[in-house]
Length: 132
Image (cartoon, rainbow, N blue to C red; front, side):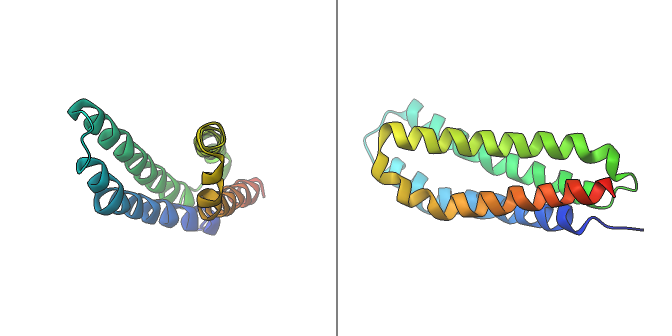
């Protein structure tokens, strides 16, 4: 059985991103917001929006792990393109929002941006490997 090593790596990374995103949210961001005088409905919205991203990463990770072991790599290509497009769109929203609201925050996005570029690159390599 051939394994798409790129999708395997992306799957593992996605699950790790999910865990670290949830952990960072719970231990830092969400605690900070909870300590403020922000209205309860806003706190709840920030809480679930934060965890939507964590769960998306987990689902993407599980999907890529499944795709890594798929016998017919050409059949999983559309799913990989779709997930990659969602990740790129998510990053674009983050980047543009930061530009519009606080341009000085761009520096804080550099590590995330590099990780996303590597992540997308690995997905592209996995798609390309599926073509061979």
